[in-house]
Length: 85
Image (cartoon, rainbow, N blue to C red; front, side, top):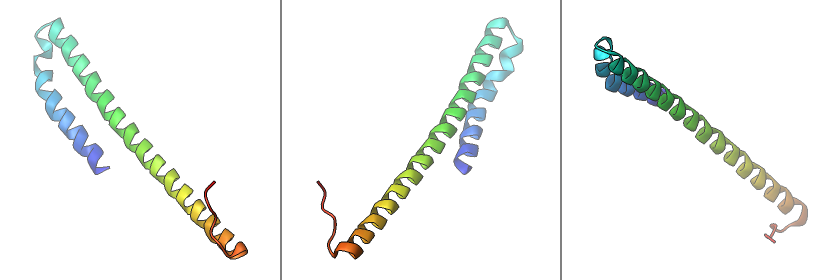
């Protein structure tokens, strides 16, 4: 959450100086809209990538836990560790 706030703050610092000339002409308005849109898309993209990274890490931890559990079960029942095939 702290990284998201930091990224949002950095994006706003980069975009806010560009927002001032928006009232000058239509070209500036268009550039401002595009830059705000790009900043919003970047913030959303970073958030989605972060969630995906955490979800993948949780899945990997769950897989490791299941494999260790099966290895312990196999050892208890057969007295030897499973061999990869």
